[in-house]
Length: 580
Ligand code: GLY
Image (tube, rainbow, N blue to C red; front, top):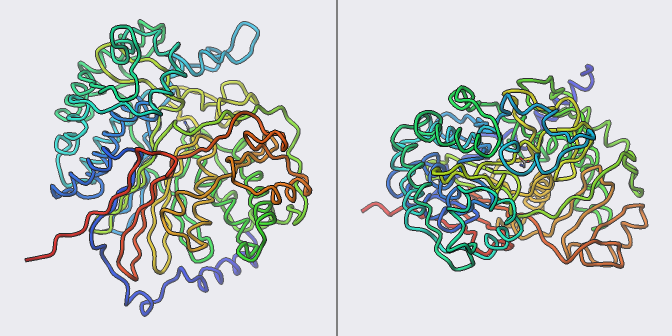
């Protein structure tokens, strides 16, 4: 950074409204008057509230929410997967990210994923044992409880164990997801055992009981890390993977570690943003996009011009994702440059205010529509602690493989590696050397749990959505900056651009016909599902499952927003009991 850029940066920091004065904070509440949780399933939200009522903090509640989601949303996440947990400790004021991303087993080299013609073997990369990385979620639950919680792991896992044992009603998304993955799921005896009733798959309204998963959770509750990664569960996982034709070793299970990482932080207007660091691509991409956009007064623009600029920022950030990002323990990421104001300024200068920049014409693949994979929850507790957790098994029902006797559906996260350089994965995003598979390496992710804070407000936001996660969080941040409520942010219409394919994809109804026309006149290609006039593919579609919570410190009120696209999600506030 040159001298004038450094001076500019210093001036920006000093003048930033985020540099709050003591006077401005004097009228602000220092603690919320209760707690708030938003998650993708009401049983998970209730599990978190139950643990808070027992005296737990946000981190204990996160264990309860995360583990209950693992039981009731096998379509999205589970003990066989991983996730990122962004934590704010109100006592110390510190933010950290627990990285519980899956790791590549030694056997899963790039060559294992190529067919005899040297093409990517898509069945191997997304189905069955080879698609699965070593799970990280159970280790994160143990670490959240032992290092951050107030209650024993046993107490915080109790709601999930109860729901796994007693069952819950299967909802429409789950049954539809099963139908789309049925062929893969029914390849494996352990999976058939859980999902078939007299040879028929679970249907909406059935009560799904998972006694084996309850037992696996019980062992985790009693023994912590060792209850999953060593002993009975580990033996069953190794056996199940081997019987299905894959290869994991006992050492790589027992050697799994959660990494505590420093989050990415930057300012956008008067907001301090704290977000996911690599191996998530989300934080760096958000920093890049928002710092590019900071150069314009978006609120003063008409919808078409605002959308054009947002799309151009998306295009540039996703191009960088393709080439530079991977597991920071294995590759050098030029993080300082990619998140700097100077770099954003340079990218901004390449954006024409009226014309789309054509993306490099490398072959891209249409992005499949995706909404139910992965899940997110947001928590603020009465002490002001915060958790943003995004967790996943990757695609719908992960690899489809449940090693017999465990109830644990394994992820298919290996597809998030660049298994063949330059060949798009299931989300249509590509990568090169930085994200090539290697023993013990974590695959690049888009999961972006994020905190926003300004003088008045504290917000936790996140969503599932594969490569669209980052742009949904971006639109959510812009929505909050526009003054929308948590529920309005969760309901915002969505659009996305990821460099390749060179097109804007948009939810049905996201743009008026007039805005579509204006964007097309600027040179944008738009994929509007269901709208053949615009060249859109497929039927009408919506995506995402955004869960966000907000604490307004000026009015000392809590609120939550749960994505209306997901009928079983819920956001609930729990008020402090008045002192007698
Ligand atoms: N598996 C989706 C992601 O981590 O980005």
